[in-house]
Image (tube, rainbow, N blue to C red; front, side):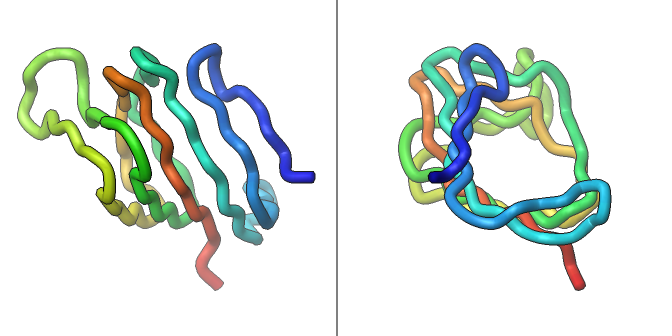
Length: 107
């Protein structure tokens, strides 16, 4: 059975397939990530693997709390690809959202 769990009180993930080993820098995984209405992350973050994201449902705002340059809200059918080492976030969702994500290391 696929792994499911909470990343925070308002953000949940369900691993659909694969395994990502961040210590050995190998593998891949696909997951669903759900933000409850009003859920948010606190700060930008970075990782050393590729990440492809598709916003299936809801809204996702990228950037800080204030109307700063680069602050943007996205809706369904939005795709993003982040190479290793790219800072992204923080994120928040007013009405909640569901993301399909693929994470992998380049060979």
